[in-house]
Length: 632
Image 1 (cartoon, rainbow, N blue to C red):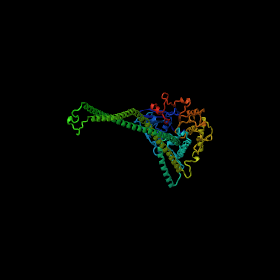
Image 2: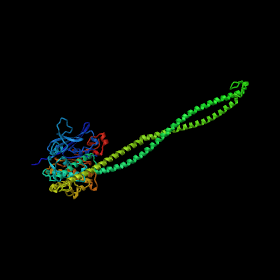
Image 3: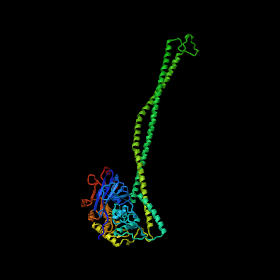
Image 4: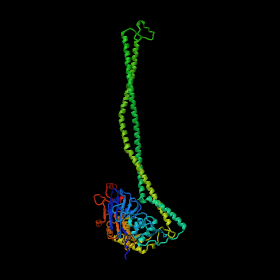
């Protein structure tokens, strides 16, 4: 009697928002290809599939997803049942609907609430639901070298099915995720898929009670701290090496910004100082001009007084002269008759002396008028000079003020803000690097605590844990795939139990360039799928690969460059011939062969609103302006 084939395939992935057109991509059995221009959402599809299968980090906050709040994913089991999984774009739990709903179901359609966290005590979680579809419900995998076990979570196997662009090129085994503590359960999960046998029968080894309590307390504390740090690191998409490069660039930018700030600051201070000087000069000139006008006004009144005095004295002069001409009569001063005039009195009656005195006084006043006229002329000339110079000073002051207010000050403000932004970014990057270092140190400490006295290397398992015949047959399945693809490094393939990775033609898989590492990682994942299907061991039945043909696009060197070979054609030929109970979704930037492009299940994202499909999300003016590398 043939065992029932278990597993499921993906049918569609859709994004929905109240004021947004649906953004949906559909999948079928066998080969599915999404290819085309960069920055169109291809890699975002891979991330969203992982997100909808229980991935915890929130989806990247790319501009194109703004306005979308719901993600739906359709699932078809291999025995003909259909389900739709609903999740908020912000994460959290799930709703599970029976049937395929390519639009958000109405509120009256029944659904089941599923937690995002796996639990072996309650099956109302997405992980348990998916594991049941794969025939893996209730399985347990080894946790550490003391044979302690954990309940199998769908997240344990998801990384073997969904391989993103970062993971596919890593210089480590596909069974390792950079966390040493996860190496043991990762290998145990791999063994479970290959053999169909879990670790439920393992009995944990005895250990010293007090030592165990101390170790467990330390592990508990480290796990809490690591959880907190990882939550803070979720928003970081850069590796430590990239962060270090970014820090160096920021430091260079800060030095350049500091030089520009200093230069502009000096320019601002010089312009502001000159503006203050011009304002002072203008103010002093206006005060002096007002003083000159006031003095001219007073001197005009003084001159009028001089004229009046001269006129009065000339009248006295003329009167005295006239008395001298008319002869002796009554005294013009006291009115006495000549016979009665007494010279010894106060009135002498000397008109000539009076005339002479008037003339003398007139001469003095004329001299004063001459001096006054010279002073007035000098003041008027000074006033004319002020009137001529002040407009130029006003224009220069307006020009400098305009430059300060409209150019120099805004530029200085912008440079200061930019410098502040760079400084803040540098602080964030330094904090992230310090956090990475702290996490790595904590993981090393935790790995040390996990060491067993009989097995000092964290996570090391005996070679016999996976039977040699099983790893041999698995390696031969991968070898057959690589030969069928005309892989350039042709030769024997075997599984190295020490590195937990493949050795191809006598060369460790991790020693290849990143392009060939991507190809061989794809062969590992596809070989696992083919091996499980051939031996009817549990497997979800699908594989998602992001950029497996990287060597065609970004080879590390001549040995890594597949241009001119037929590996791409053979790769797609193999995938096109996959049986109906498997599904492979390939995301690539390079165009597949013409025959593949013509398939119904091949989708091209053109990034051209006038040709084919623009991208994952419909074209808008905003999306064209804001397209960024984060979208793909």
